[in-house]
Image (tube, rainbow, N blue to C red; front, side, top):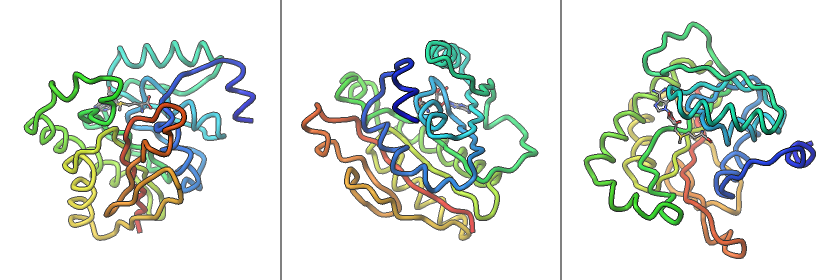
Length: 215
Ligand SMILES: C[S@@+](CC[C@H](N)C(=O)[O-])C[C@H]1O[C@@H](n2cnc3c(N)ncnc32)[C@H](O)[C@@H]1O
C-alpha cells in the first residue's frame, strides 16, 4: 500500500527521517494521530501512507504552504491547520501524538554545513526551553495509556537526552519504551539514528527519537 502511493507521486526525504517513523509508528495503537509540528509534511505524509488519520498542525504559514504543495502534488487529502501549539487551548485529548520539535537542526550538517556556524550553545539552550514547553504541553493533551513520539534532527544532548531526562524527572507518570531498530544507537531514554547503517546509500541525517507512554 505504501509503495503504491509513493509511485503515484514523489516526496524526497532523508532516509533517517523515514526510519524515525518506520521504527516508531507501531506504538501508535490509535490511528487518529496529531502531528504537532507537521510542516512541510514529510512525517505526516508518511504516516498517512501507513494508514493513519493525521491532524497536522504548524504555526508557520510559509511551511504550511510548502506542505500544501506537497500534498496536492501527491494527490492526498490531509487535515492541515495553522495553529501555534503553545498558544492554543486544547479541549480534545489524544492517544497518538507526534512531536517533531523545532531544533538546531545540527543533525542535518551534512546537507547544511552552515548550521555548525550559525548555531551556538545559547541558541541550543533557547531551543531546549521551547522543546521542554512543547513536550510538557503534549503530555497534558495525551490520554493515559497514549503514546507520544518525540523527535529532533539534532544530536546535541541539550535537545535530546536532557529534554527527556528533565521531563521524566518532573512527570513520574511517563514510561520510556524501547525501539526495535538496527539503524539506531541506544542512549539513555532515547535513540540516535546511526548514519553508518546507511553508508552504502550515502549516509543519513542524524535524528533523536524517544517513545513516551503516559501511565
Ligand atoms: C522540524 S520542523 C517539522 C518537520 C516536519 N515534521 C516534517 O517531517 O516535514 C519543525 C516545525 O515546527 C514548527 N513550529 C515551531 N514552533 C511551533 C509551535 N509553537 N506550534 C506549531 N508549530 C511550531 C515550525 O514551523 C516547523 O515547521
